[in-house]
Image (cartoon, rainbow, N blue to C red; front, side, top):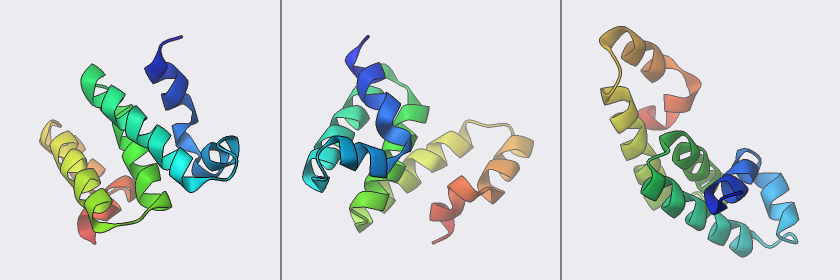
Length: 98
C-alpha cells in the first residue's frame, strides 16, 4: 500500500486520526500535512480536500480556510455550469460563503 493510500484512508474522521496519534493533535496535524503534500503531488483533489477540511476542523485558522477555499473554487471552476451551481450550493462549499 502506498503512503498516500495509507495516510489518506484515515482522513475522513479527525477524532479517529487524533485517537490513533495518541490524542496528540500536533501528530494528527503532521500526518494531515503529509497527506496534503502527497495528494497534491499525485493530483488527487478529493483526498486533498478531505485533508484540508480535517485540518481546518483541528486547527481552524484563516490559512486553512483560505487553502480550502482556493481548492473548492478550483474544483467548482472545473465543473459544467449546472453542476457548478449544485456544487456551490452544497454543504461542502459553505466555507466559500463564510
